[in-house]
Amino acid sequence: MNDIPDSDADGDLDALVRRVDPDRWLSSRFIADAHARADVVAIYAFDHELARAPKVASNALLGEIRLTWWAEVLGEIFEGRPVRRHPTAQALAHAVHHWSLPRPPLEAMVEARFRELDPAPMTDAESLAWAMGSAGSAAVLAAAALDPAGEAELAAKAGALWALAVRGRPTAALRAEARKDARRLSVAAFPAVAHGALASAHRGGRTPSEVEKRWRLTWAVATGRI
Image 1 (spheres, rainbow, N blue to C red):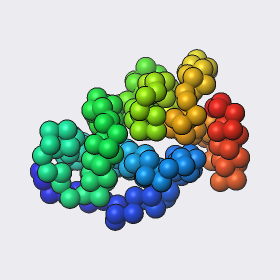
Image 2 (image 1 turned 90 degrees about the vertical axis):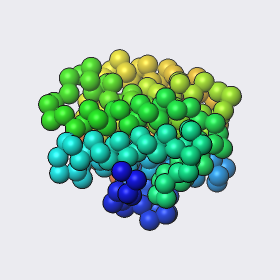
Image 3 (image 1 turned 60 degrees about the horizontal axis):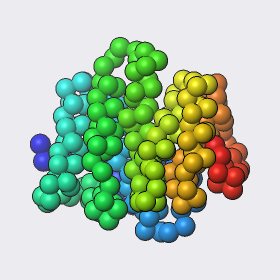
């Protein structure tokens, strides 16, 4: 179980996230401190590795094995054991220890991906739970790193809104709640939810251009609104 799973991470996590997760990579450009930015990117790289598990595994059992591998990484990080030599695992361990990030949101990110192993379509309630557990938890962790004294949980709904929008399933109620919570975040923590401003751009399954994304993100950061 300790064997490193195949990965497209070669150590340059910033380049990886830029390629596979351009929305959140662009939002991370508004983090002024380079070290904090790298730690937030590590969180997004972790989410990417989890998202890959159901996609690259040939069957549900292999997908479970890959997700369990990452759950074991969390055990190593939080229990003070040597962390296996994987670039994302090592970077995540640094972020967790440097910012004293909590374990529950990271575990929620893993659990959310287990649902993807079930071929049955998600109900609206399941989709929301999946989005809150995956991208919502990632946003909470990013906010906690950017403003350790702030209310990081306020980032959850904006992260979930973005994830559902990319899948074409956002709800008006969640959009309103996410925008309300995002306005309560500090300036320092706001880049953790800035990508929520791209939710409307993804409406209808469209893919916004990078120019449009940059414009929307710049406006969001300048106004503190998504």
